Every structure is written in structure tokens, then in C-alpha cells.
Image (tube, rainbow, N blue to C red; front, top):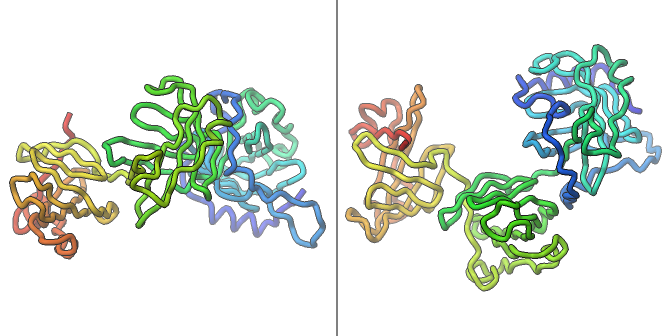
Length: 389
């Protein structure tokens, strides 16, 4: 058992104070674990203590960054356990006993200043944890709390399921694809418009996952899929290399798609490009009566469309090539700027609409967002966008 000094605890509390907890205690979540074996290669490297006496303090074996099966982020170190926006300053951890004792941060929404016990363990190839205590009056009370029962991962956490911890995937995000589809990817699921896929195996370094198709999928329910992904010229592509395999083993045995041939290496077809969704994705109406449909690949308004080649969402602008069929400036280049006013209203300006090249569109000075209702868009007001009901 390793006990941390008062100084390290104080530093941990200061560093980890991050406001209110928007998720509450995982140990009190009533959703039940399915009990399925969802082993994943990405969560097996925990740096276990060898037990050798090296004269230095052994690190907590589960240190690192994790996501759980309820959608919360965790960062674990020798001195702190961060869960969502809640912080817990670790005073004691025991790698052999697989537990840690921590004081809840004073700014936590739930049980501030009280004491917690965290247990962890392995079952079915997965790393699990339970917040066995979360509101004890003292460190001693938390230490005296009986360990959660890892032999019963479905109910052994105070009558509830233990939570699964996995290393996050490097491609976890919301995406649009080049065919108009939408994807949400995390360490546990790959979800698309027509169904979901529950990830059971992952190799982030080799860039693949294996997943079971959801029972309510439109295509091949309950069968098995393999997804590969690759990067080319800073663009992300994926291939659903298998989609109708009878078992996890069959999906695992499927050869990887050919990342050297983005145009034809996905079973004879092209890989599909993925782009992270824009903050202005959606269906909008402007104050002039025109409709706009925006995603990461195109901005369409009325009968005109603009194929996006680069977007800078944080800065609020993108560049796109005008469609060859547009009535105005076909084949030339546009720049769109957008901004949000103090009341949450969205405004846009087509700052360039007839630039000769992509570089010329990029070089166009940004519109002035200081007074979008009246000026700043080439001497005119910006256009407001409201959600199309």
C-alpha cells in the first residue's frame, strides 16, 4: 500500500479542481452491463507492477487516459483520479489490492470534500472499475469499505455493474462521409445513420476495429464487421472491410484493406473519406428566404452548391469550389465566413464568390464580425441563419 504525502495531495487538489461534475458518480449508474465479452487490444497495457523492490515508489498500475462505457473521460495518475469534471485527490493506492482511496474535490458537484474508494480489476479481457465508496466522512471510513466484487462484474459494484475502461481511439469524433452519411466513433461504438456496431476488438496503432452489428441494423443484424482506417494527405479514410461475418473470429481473420490504394483498395472499391462535422452543420434558412444545407463536404443553397476543400471550424471560415452547374461563377472559388452573436444567433458572409483559385479564396480577407446585422460583409450586412424547422 502506498500512502501519498500531504504536499502531493495539496498539489493534486489544486491541479485537479475543475468545477462541477456533469455526470455524477459512475458507481450509482443504474444501467446494467450486458455481460458480453467485449475484449479490446487497446486496454491491455496497464504497466503492471512487477513487485521488484527498486527503491522507488511503484506507479499506480492503471495510470493513463481512459473512456468508460457511459461516455465519461478519466485521467488517472499517482495523485489524482479525474472523472468528467470531478476531481479526486488520491491519498492511498495499493496495486496488489487494486484500489485507491481519494478525497473528493471541494468543487465537485456530488459529495464535495468527502472520501471515495475506487476498485479496479480485469474480467473477460476488459479493465473494469467501481467507485465502491463516494461519500465517506473520512479516509479511514473509505479504507474500511469492503472491496467491490470483481467476480460478479454485472452486479458486484454495490448491486450495479462495474464500468469498463478503454483507451480512447485516436479517431474518436463525429464525422460526415463523402456520400452524405454521418458517423460517431468512440472506443465502444461505431455508429452510422442506418445502425450501430459494438466494438469488441481494437488496434489503434494498426488502425482497425472489429465490431458486432447491432440487432436493429438495417443490414446484417447481429453479424460481424471489420473497419480499417488510413490517412492520406492529412485526410481520413475508412473501409468497412467486412460487414457480414458469422463470428468475431471470422471478422478478425479478414485481411486488412489496402491502404496503399485509396481509390480501389477497399474490396475493389474506393475507401470513403471522413471529415469531422462543422459546428454549423445543419439545415438553415437565411433572412432573404433562401435555404442552406451545410455539412463537412458541401454548402448548398438554392440550386447552387459549393464543394468544400478546406475548413477551419475554430476560426469560422471555409473555402469551396463553386459547382460547374452553378448559375453564377461556375467552377470558380468561394470563401464563407461565419460568426455567432452575443445572443447565439448565427451569421454568414460569402466573402469571396469568384476567386480564380483556391489560394486566392484563402487569401481573401475575413469579413468583419463586429456588427454583422449592419455591415462588415463587403460593405453590406451579413446574412442571418436560423434552423429550418
